[in-house]
Every structure is written in C-alpha cells, then in structure tokens.
Amino acid sequence: MRWSNLPARREDGVWCPTIDGVIEDGPDDRVVVQIRGLSILEEGPGVRRGIVAAVWFHAEVERFRWLNYVLGVGEGEIDEAAETWSLRVAEIRNEAATRPPAIR
Image (cartoon, rainbow, N blue to C red; front, side, top):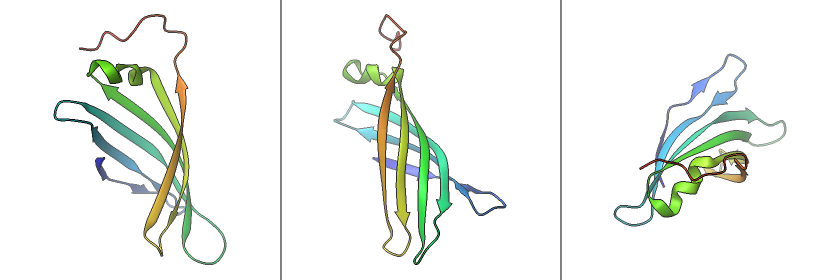
C-alpha cells in the first residue's frame, strides 16, 4: 500500500490521522483507501498511542467492486519508540443494498 498521512493535532494532544492511499494488485487492479481516525496517547511507560479509525474503499475493478459497499472499523496501536504500528480492520458490509455497485 502506498499512502500519505496529513494528521491534524487537537489541543488535547490527540492526533487525527488523515490517510489516503492505494493498494495495487497488478498493473490495472487498484483499490483506493481512505482512513480517518484518532491516535490517543496511552498512560504508562514508553510512548504508545491507541488508534481507532474508519476505513473507506473505492474500487472500479470488477473483482474488488464489492469493497465499495464496505465500511471498515479499525483498532490498533502505535509504538513510537519502536517506530511500528498495527491496525486491525473489521468489515461492515451494506447488506441492505440488493444489487452490485454501478461504478465503472
């Protein structure tokens, strides 16, 4: 995934990630990803931040078009000392829509 992040920082020290990226699975198979969330400092030793996020997808390629009906809900953590982060995303799919997306 290639991405950029332009986070804002609130007065209370909470960072608000604004991540825009693309996942490529072949020369013409792309899924655009948008992540918006909060990165909150945790109490305790070291510098660790808890993450909560919403994730949206946009896909024009037929085999990934189902992702247009998915909202991702993410949770994770940043370890600033180790310079690592993880984000686990759960899928919430629109089951009320009875037809495939008409995105071409």
